[in-house]
Image 1 (cartoon, one colour):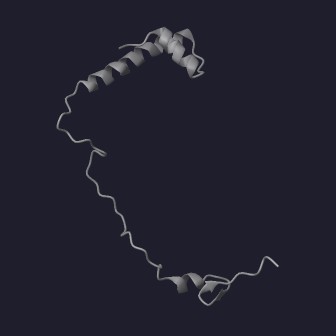
Image 2 (cartoon, helix red, strand yellow; image 1 turned 45 degrees about the vertical axis):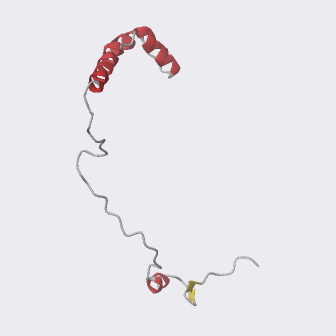
Image 3 (tube, one colour; image 1 turned 60 degrees about the vertical axis):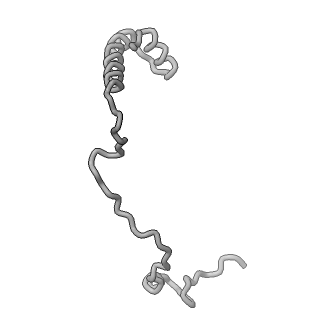
Amino acid sequence: MSVSPEQVRHIAKLARIAMSDEEIERLVPELNAIIGWVEQLGEVNTDGIEPLTAVIKQKLRLRDDAVTDGACRDAILANAPGAEHGFFAVPKVIE
């Protein structure tokens, strides 16, 4: 498969990219080289090879999925301007 200058011109028009004839002539061989490389990759036999998500093995560091209360209520309330009965105390804003 290869692209022609007319196809590149059409794609540029669809993408609303203004391109001169020189730019299109310069781009055609580059696009054909890319398409050729992709076709070459498609010829590689990958039967029996598991898909990879990364090239090196890595393990995500995740914390345990456990519900806790944080056990730091007093430390948080120590920074509050006002606290009552274990909650933030805020001034009344609606009469």
